[in-house]
Length: 110
Length: 116
Image: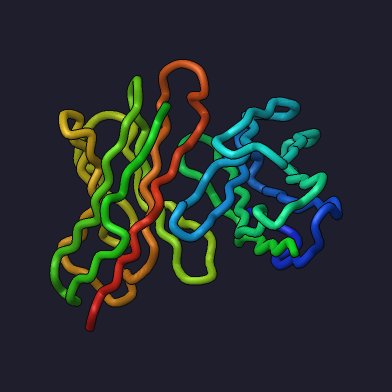
């Protein structure tokens, strides 16, 4: 089944403790992206990647890092999480136009 | 910079009536436009897109949208609403001209409630 998977689905952590949210797709898509969803703000793009080793900033990259060493994986790294990064995070991938979204990761930073 | 506006936070419509969810956009070049739907506790699902060609595009679940370049709008429509259409709808735009053309910008979302 073609899909985008994210892990973990739920995470509660403390300020400053480094974490990684993994994202993997099995559709051989070149384009992958991370978004955060906050009430009243919709989805905002954090980072995107056009291909392996090619990444670029979206609208809200501060406090986040990404890497794209393999085509199928695009992990999101929070080096020192803060409470304002509490949000619902979505990974997505696409081949041409429409994006396929993962199920989301709900992150709470206390 | 590109942007999307969805002027209505919520739209209520009676089952069987036509529905419209509004979207306007701003880009410096040519737009690719998209609609996505999010059901409760789920990820987003693609509904339809405008890339080029016919201004009226048809998508999944009986939805359609009309691209209007002069009004910079891309409203989502359905002739007859179903209760199962109740969800959160997002409009999105890509400016395919120049730098940053892979960046996708979403609107804030419109909650559609279809009343039985």
